[in-house]
Length: 509
Image (cartoon, rainbow, N blue to C red):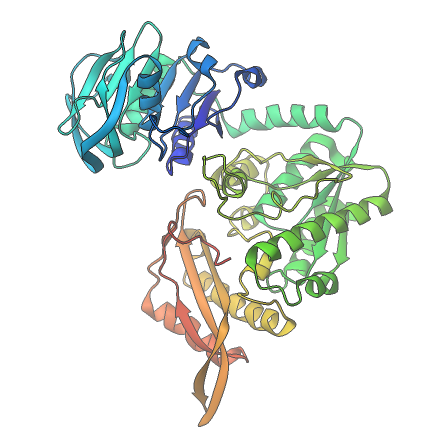
């Protein structure tokens, strides 16, 4: 176990990704996490202090629990994390007249376990405006950059290391090797965290949590809820009851697909609830995306609570919450404002009658897929593109209405069909349609039209934390546009979204 303390860096999640790629388990927590809570982590091997946008000499700069320094396990500080180390141990951090943002060259000056196997000259990614003007006593400089005297420091006796650059970013050529050296040469970690071991540990944890209780599953039919459900079924069998809420915000034909696929697995323990009218009535007149998400989240829980009372003796609610949901919904990165709330994170009422079971909450999306394969779930389900918890409500900009839902479902179905025909569905992270809250003038059959605009979005990503727009062939875009305009009554214009994440998010709301 490696603990990552987050001080607000945009790259913190990349640290976790790189560590898990080495088959070492890690988790991200707020930088000020108290030492008392460290006892909950079994076999803690090391701590990483992330970067951040603050200056350590600022009055309101975030700091770790002061007892972290004497905890007795290896520490690696990255960028702001290194500056925290320096200031704590008597060094000095000051504003630099030569800021470093982007690629930089460093010269490795001293033998160090952190730089084992590297050349004397390395290209790294810098992102800082402060520098170490005085090195703390007991530390030595192990690398320098052209603009900064100090690019890396260490105190072998205390097992504390710091780098001014970001090894987690792919632009740092030997960054992975540096992180590997910290994991295996400094922390003596083992590369043994796999989905097989995760299943063993999680099944044991679930059984210990649930005991003889019954669990209600929010079965949407997407990858996350499907994997979560099969995981629970592996652990507790028929103690699991799956409920699929037909809220009318799903993709075209989704409820039928859920019944056909999962009815065979769960039998009478799969319940279909028709709640379209309830959701649409509560969303009437609502245009703010955050309010939509909150309404949908509360309504979901309310319906599950109602179903549990019908079923009697339901103690737990299973949710397919994954790590990006948590990261984006709460400011564990040090951000004062969350990016957006997720229905299965921010939408839970304070007084919920059921306790949560969340077997995926520390997994990234690609890890969820790997878990699903290990559980034997068919590829047709595992390879499904991600679909937002609030459904099409966040792809209808503005008020959600029956008319817009009908238009969007048909347009989205065409996008999916054409992406599949082109052999691109499994090569693209996510592709879908959005209906905009504007109408434009068009002409069809010599007649004037005034109808909605459909936007198409296609992105590639590894974990939904960052995403690049896909350069779809122009012929494919033309085919989708032609079909939507000709086949979907109510739409007369199609546009394509070419925004990356960041600065945009994958979903429009």
